[in-house]
Image (cartoon, rainbow, N blue to C red):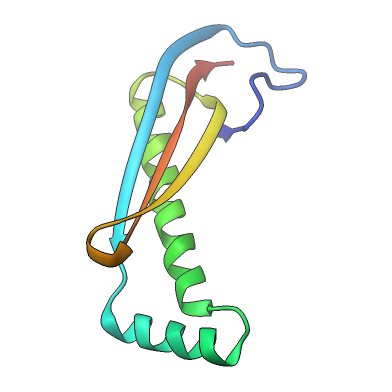
Length: 105
């Protein structure tokens, strides 16, 4: 499955548009991660813990996006867009939304 943020794939003409596909993932950050992230904020530097959670959420959303496109009969998704939001009490959860157009090339 080819994923691209561009609306076309160079050298690969789109034969058929299968429709818009979306995937959502919500992951909670626990208290231990919050404590370590708070220490990192206090002392400075990157928060590896939150970066891993963010990467995990993005990976889940992209996997789901590919699966939905495959079920629609597509072999590529163009125009992929990722949106990130915090939700829940005090922004305790991370939501990643992936969307794009499923196509057959």
